Image (cartoon, rainbow, N blue to C red; front, top):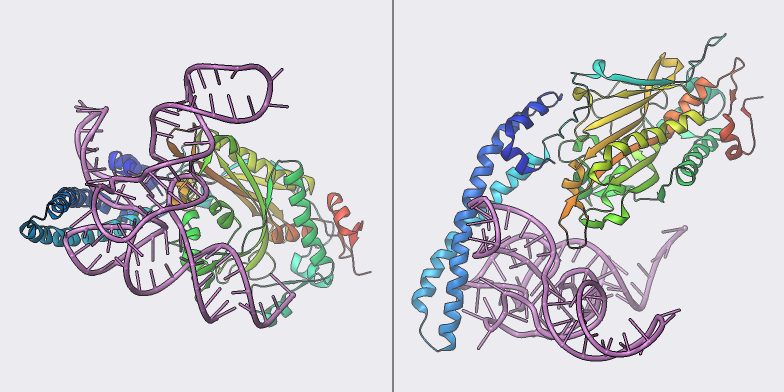
Length: 426
RNA sequence: GGAGAAGUACCCAAGUGGCUGAAGGGGCGCCCCUGCUAAGGGUGUAGGUCGUGUGAGCGGCGCGAGGGUUCAAAUCCCUCCUUCUCCGCCA
């Protein structure tokens, strides 16, 4: 959510910056009228309320002195009726204005390259060597099936399409990756571990920006108005919703493993095979709460923490600075980290690291105070995947595959895999 | 799921329609006494947000949330949420 005062005072500049986004901002133009209307109504109704408060005191005084107050009571009945009318009018304007603010995307940071779509994302750096295979490399879904690790057919029977059952060494690898990443971030990168609820309420989904615009992307528990989390970002960021934290607590760095649930509405037919695009997947998520002046340093930090995982797994990747057209609704700046997937002959997103600045903090009302008596300011929130587990499994299977269909286990994972060096049928 | 109780400012807590536009503590700030990790006395302070004004300020809202009754609601009525206790069920 943007600051309404910023829109009021600097409308043209806000509109210019938002125009670089690949988002519909036509609703923006209604802001001026609504904002003015709101203030007009407030002024009128507050004047009446002030008058009513004063006269109520007089009535009270008269009652105590046993005087007759029926005449001014009658006047006040009219005032109160008008107040009620104006309050309702204000409620409607407020509602519309609030909805409008909730549907305006974040302002891109000046260091985000201006561009229309993913074609114009900027490659920041590359790491690792793309493997050259002397044999015909297989896709991870074939490797996983042959090695008894992944069972898509049975998952489709048990649930439906876009689900998977991990089995045997597949399940073990998934769990090893979760533990490896959690340990790394806790022990080496200074994070506090969180195990969050996998369902959240509507306020939380609104706080991080999934609602109101993207409700169709989420799975919903209708009876409770709860949503299955699309990422641990939602419960972890909302832990501090409506709180004022003291400056000594900043920065707060949380790491959370969770399953994630996404309806993938609008991506029917894309990545239908394999682990890349599932309705349910595992992810280790990094979330930072920081002072505004520190947030861009922390964006680099989060990205480096995610990259560290790929480096230790020795998986080739590149980092993209997302252009304004591909930033998404909530981010001011975003790095996507893409891992090499041989079967796609391409890099595929495995982590997304974003600085939301005060966009989420304003929605979720998360503030901090520099001094005990000072004014509360919105802090900045950031998050990044560290990493998506399913896509990491896909990358490991494909990049570490051998000619005989076996897969070498990356060294750092072996302690988590019972000391095994290789997954094979033999 | 059933029955009951409760939700007031950072914390505890008084308060059943108008001199409460929130008493009293604790805490916190300052001062005094004492003096070395004890205790005592005095005094001050109450959040947040919106509107308005260049500004000091003025005004609105606020007693879990949202409605309602009333000239007037922390106080009466309704709905919801959360917490606690007991019972039932249960990983």
